[in-house]
Image (cartoon, rainbow, N blue to C red; front, side, top):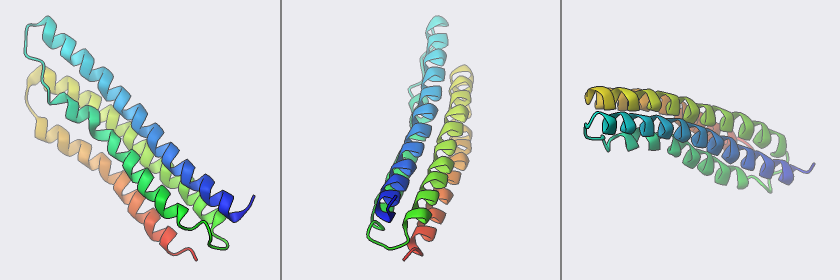
Length: 150
């Protein structure tokens, strides 16, 4: 496999893994939000619209994967960039995607807690932000590593 092909494969892997994590994370949080809203409706309580912020939180990891993908694609013509970009694409994408997955799990718990108590929104959002930080770190450190190629 040529260097250019490995660069493209690493770029696609990064975006794909990050996007898969976002899909899983938003799906988990969305299912919890729907369940929480159902409980509110059944109890004749107002359904908190704020739950959508927990549902949407894992989407940003797809953006981080896309940013890395574009930077990686810029290494297409660089000799010897294939293996480093492929490896960094897989592992950075995996770290970013897992961050989204677990952010969705935390978002699901936040949906349940917020709907039941109508309290703690800022605390729940802060917890999701900490999980998000893992993805930001993975992206930044991968950008530094990829910047040193060539």
